Length: 308
Image (cartoon, rainbow, N blue to C red; front, side, top):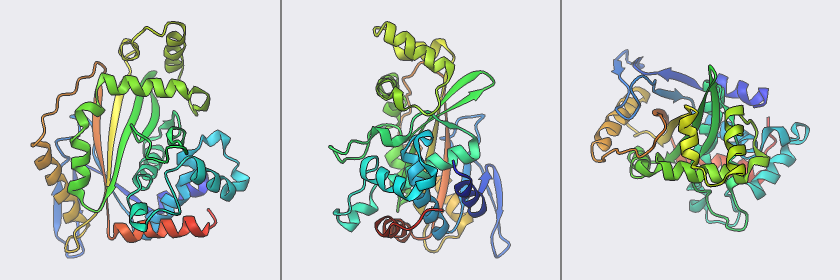
């Protein structure tokens, strides 16, 4: 990630780790514990920033979200941005404005940048390589493909991002498919997709490289078995940005969202059919006006605002 973008994130965004005690402008204290969705032993996080800064982060983060960072010409960033928007991002200037507000990249860019900036992940493969200009549809599957070497052990940080007006809509969109999202079948299919794009991998861990080579020599092996045999863990970050209720301050919005996660989680039966170790953690980002925030990003894309 380029330094100017990292500086923007660090100056504009505050990160809190649960359990947290927040004090509002009226000196009212709110104590908030993490949700039941986050795995025991894992931390949960919330973030705070103003809408204009978040718009700037999204707009300036598109190129590094969509493209292999080692293939970006950083001396010609504006040209690179135009390229990725045309070839590696679900964006069509001719779409209705309401359709543009519903694109998935707003939350996906934030997830990608926050994972890299706050959790020091490496990008395995940029999300843009799974977009097809012929289909012109949102890429399917995980929204981030990152990795971490944790003292010699490989962790796959394959995440999910939602940016809805309604928090309840966002969390239900995650929970309604979580049993499939965290399954051997789903992970195995993603491994095939990564193998198809191996020439575009940004950071390849030796353990994963060995598994890919082994599969190329013997494509009958089960990739998820190989992940298990190598003690690889799947870390599933769930990032939800949403518009907080008008009468809620930041503190009440976070507390309400955690309560909603626990309440909605009770409506689903989690049955994760996957062999490898899995951990889940939640990341929350409330905003004041989600549509206006996205409208700024759209305006800058279409007027080709210079990047930082």
